[in-house]
Amino acid sequence: MLSTFITGAVIAVLVFYVIVIYNNLVRLKHNVSQAWSNIDVILRQRH
Image (cartoon, rainbow, N blue to C red; front, side):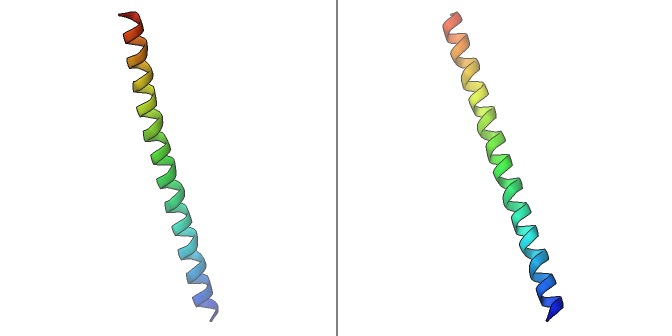
């Protein structure tokens, strides 16, 4: 009984960790895309 609870808790923590990492990667990808868009806008304004 106790080992099942511990195993479930460990799996829940790992799933939570994977979700957090995935969300951070998506946020970073969005930030990179936004940065390139800002560079494009600045270059168009210069031209």
